Image (cartoon, rainbow, N blue to C red; front, side, top):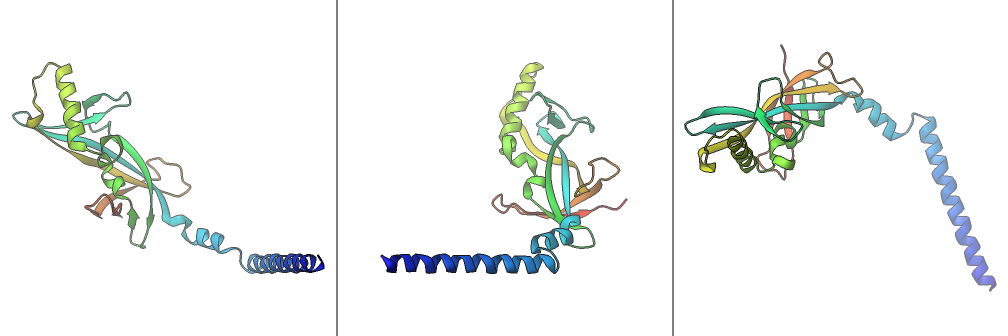
Length: 190
C-alpha cells in the first residue's frame, strides 16, 4: 500500500507544479502587456462593422412590365415605394485602409437565404396570392423574379446605428456558390 500512496503523492506534486507553472506564465504575460486576446481586440476592434442591407424583390411579368415588391412586417406583399425596403443585419470587417470590407454572401443576397431562399418560387407564390387578392389573372409561368439591393450601410463597432454614423457600401464581388458564404464590399464616396 505504501507504493500506491507514493505514486499518488508523486502525481499530486506533479499536478501542483504544472498549475504553479501555468499561473506563473499567465502572470508574466499579463504583467508585461496583457493577454494576446486583449491585444488582438485592441488592434482590430475598429475594423469590425455592423451592416444593414435594404432590399426588395423585382419581378418581370409578361405583358405587365417590371415591378418591385416587399414583404411587410405582417408577412403580406406590397409594392416597394423606395422607402419601405426589407432589411437584414450582419457584420463585416475591413481588410484594407482604403475601405475594402469582407462579409458574407447572405449580406449581398439576403433573399437567397432564410424564408426567401428559393427567391423565384417564393416571389411567384407571393405574387400569385397578391394577384388573386386584387382580382388579377396571372400564371406562374408569366413571372420572372429576383432580389435587388436598395442599399448597404456600415456602422463602426460600438457606434449607434443611425444615418449620421452610417457609411454607404457597394458590392465589389461575391461568391456564386452559397457554400462559399463570402462577399467583398467597398465604401462609397459622395
